[in-house]
Figure (cartoon, helix red, strand yellow):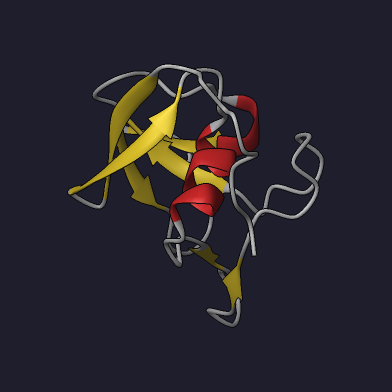
Length: 98
């Protein structure tokens, strides 16, 4: 569904999602990089466990919550990728201190 624009010449960086190396582009948000990678990366809701994908891509809906470099509850749509970044898909409710 999502693909990169032809002629995208931005520098590649490598991020790690659930231990898997993924190529992203400098300037991508975490959520954009996940969507462009084709991974079925999404969070699970706390109540029903329903799978969610990023929705608004501007920090309003919280459907893109991920754990980045050990810090949980990060909105992936607002965080730019960095080479070597470690990302875990958030499962369940947001918790303070995770």
